[in-house]
Structures are given as structure tokens and as C-alpha cells.
Length: 111
Image (cartoon, rainbow, N blue to C red; front, top):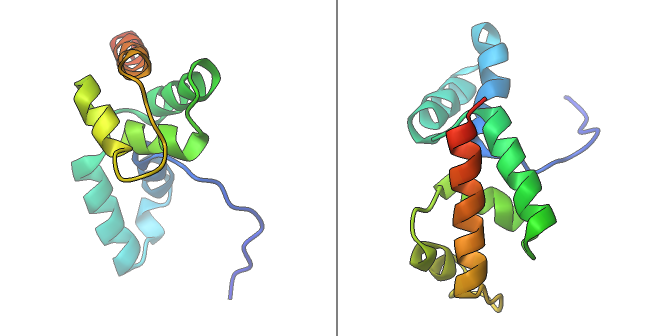
């Protein structure tokens, strides 16, 4: 049995890249996960990581919140505010627009 040495929350895109490296030796569950990630990961892992870093530095978002946003890749401020509607966390329209601005900048910049 393997021992977990550390834990880190990552985006779907980063998980996809990790699984692709080991693609030849994946077990059936990992292969299904790879297929899922291939369908639903919307951006490159490096871009995803840059967006998460900027969101945590330039907004009030926590890392796990930034990862959630990157995984969903919202295109409208209402989508962002609705992600937090069931929690105690409030995201203003201005902050939601800042989030979208960062996403647009980084995705247009690409790798």
C-alpha cells in the first residue's frame, strides 16, 4: 500500500496532465478518470495554474475557490456569484468581473 506524503488541491487540467504522463501504466479507474478529464478539462494545465495563482493573489478567493472557478470556467459574473450562493461567502459583482478579466487575459495569452 502506498503512503500519502503530501496533499495538494489541483485543477482538472493539472490532473489530466499528471495522468497523461503515466498513461501506459494506468489501472481501469485511472483510465476512466483520464477519459473524464479529457472531456471536461477546458484549458491547459499551465494556464490553469497561472489563473489560480492570479485569482488567489489579486482577489479575495481562497485556493480551493479559485480551483473551483478554473474547473468550471464561467463566462458571466452571475455564474461566479451563483457558485457562492449556497455558502456564507459573498462575491461582489466587481470581484466577479475581476475574476472574468483574469480568466480572459490568461486564456488569450495561452501557453
